[in-house]
Image (cartoon, rainbow, N blue to C red; front, side):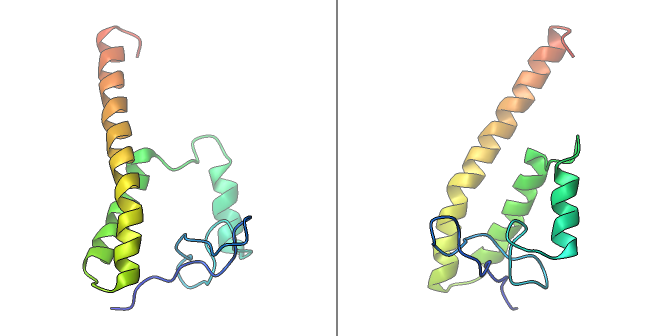
Length: 109
């Protein structure tokens, strides 16, 4: 199976971007100038358009699982970069669930 390609653009510090490229493109959502990327960025700026933590967690988990099936050094480095993000998102998601539960119990929601 062919792995996903990283964005071919440079970040503001002049270093290679470490975000996955959009499917069928060589640049990520933020560096792409395609109509598809423009539409996705526009959608994100509308109320309710931002990706939820749960959706981001699902996406990162899917990426991690794909990388876990590979044994090359680059995949290992990418897994090591994803682990802290996954832990942070899981913790935030759990904390938000607790806060929502507490708010409902107190009649705030």
